[in-house]
Length: 168
Image (cartoon, rainbow, N blue to C red; front, side, top):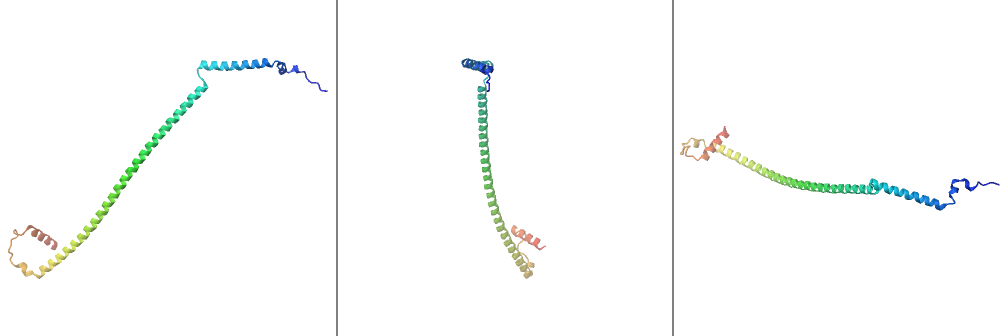
């Protein structure tokens, strides 16, 4: 048969008979550890939990501050964008006004060009009739004049000068 080793040979077996002493020693070690940690924290004045809480609050404050800055910048961008839109609308209105004025000026220019063309045709017709009247009445031109040049109205003198320039 197989022989079993006696129980008293293992170190755990020696303490196996006194479980209350083992529990009391373990409890004493745990209490001693907790007490030393508490004394160490009280002596140094720093607790990791409070440090973490402070760090968390600082992070939250920074996040809130960053969020407020983003909101302010967003509002500033919105205001700038609205100002740009308003300025663009003003420019578009001015452009529309300029286009209308340009169209009106072009219409006036066309009308004036037509009138100048009509006046040019009338002047050409008058020149031709004046030339034909002078050619048919050479004797009437050599007849003595009853009025002196100074007695003539100024407009006739100016008209005669322009006729003389046109002939020459």
